[in-house]
Image 1 (cartoon, rainbow, N blue to C red):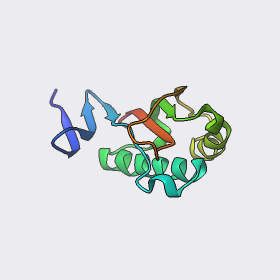
Image 2 (tube, rainbow, N blue to C red):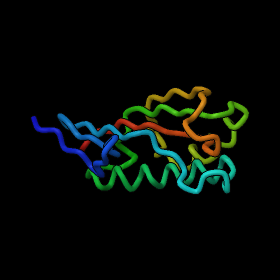
Image 3 (cartoon, helix red, strand yellow):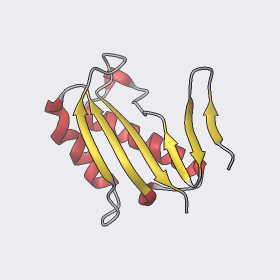
Length: 117
């Protein structure tokens, strides 16, 4: 089965599709330090929604989420937005860890794996 890539760049693709599964690259807030954790999480989830739509799927088909927080003190704030975004009864397997992100203004990075319909 062929591999399809979405938004291919010189270093990475924003998504890859293979064998009915969509793998998203880690998504971060484009606005950076101007947003709090809630704002960054909303922006990241909107980017995820857009990429999933490009791939032909949506958040109801998310299998797994890996969430990286620059500061675990932001866990509750991120979860407040996450809980509004996920589809009730369709919540994915998930892990959340604290990690040093590539840019200091980033508070959250989310990696998603989803199934195609």
